[in-house]
Length: 73
Image (tube, rainbow, N blue to C red; front, side, top):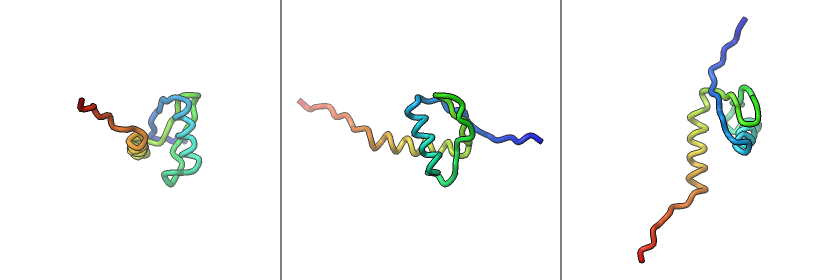
């Protein structure tokens, strides 16, 4: 019998991959989402977690970035 699972191939740098592995290990979203750890820069993740991950990373990027203001000389 063949089992099919919908997933998404993620390509990222090794640091981001380690962060994703950490989130998966501590089940930050209530369940494990990494289906396959393929190599140093690729993961196969569950399709139903993609939107949640995108929102989490958007929030993270908003927190670590700062607005650029032009000086009014």
